[in-house]
Image (cartoon, rainbow, N blue to C red; front, side, top):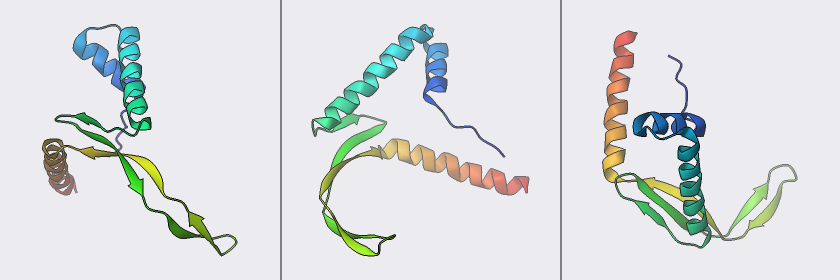
Length: 109
């Protein structure tokens, strides 16, 4: 079964339908929200959305990697990377829903 993914545009349409707010306004709010989360993380701070998840800046250790084309070792410096961790409640709901989908898919075959 072919499934489509949620895009930013589809999210805007869904938010507009659910709230009754014009798409232009929803777009501005969504863009501002994303911008605030990005700016917060660029400052090295984490952003917590209760019931959804956490946008966390993690420190990755430096390591020695390998350039697979040249076959020589390369030093990868330590760095900070943005990550997202779902909340426990949200994760449990996704797991339960996907478990149900797996059993439904088996029944279809």
